[in-house]
Image (cartoon, rainbow, N blue to C red; front, side, top):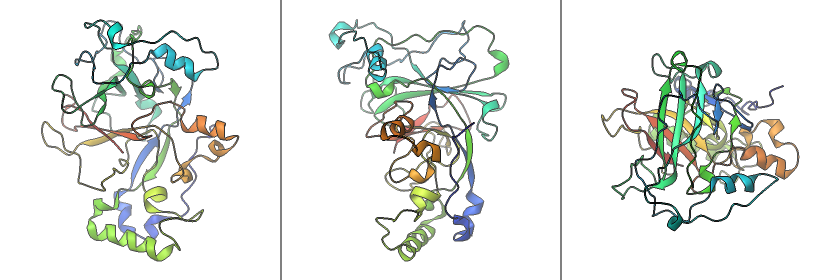
Length: 333
């Protein structure tokens, strides 16, 4: 039985704001759960369907000396398990200058598992997201940059008919910059959910109406009582790992669409890579079964992937709709 089911919203927000109906989108919540996925399965952090005769991508930025102390992947995994054999520290001085830095598989999704998602380019039915497990800084001209001081992201699309039968075993970097940049392998339990956008998408006047409604409806708009829905937390965008739909809100409100740095086109929101599946403000989105058991059990469900970005933030990944060759843009919120 699949218990990864989002509870219904406590109210139909379109009954208050009918104009939102035209802006509804379907997101696919991924609900990752730790497992041992294979290359032909949709997964977080699992081995991707990467043809054996195709070179595995590496970070062109070389060494990442501005980053803090490196971490051995085997130690990171060991600290997450019940059996931990320590393999010793690693330092930058102990890493040869000509060391190559393989990217890490972050997310693989087959179209057959997410029939509600319409973001695959024509002729493609596999999405693969990889990243360099070190922060890339905007002011360092020697390394590529997506738009934030965080892991450098690449997207690959494939057609299952071109995959063949033999897959490459991904090489592992000798170190990662942060333990939270190494995803724990997980299988996915995709679920379609309806979302609505940041109110700024509909203009300043609409944004003011939402604020006025909350002020008039709830006793304390800043500190809601249990069951009192807030547009930003409960009625608009789902938290956690997801594919498509509306992008999570950023810190600064709505600043207009994210634009491609190459052609200026409004970019398409591809995925949210989350440090946590829900928090105190977004708990209404948590499947009921996920809130059962001890606090430790709940925490395991909240942080199944062990990905940690910034201060428990979510990475938003955007792609150009006109060309898969144009660089990805990502940010944190």
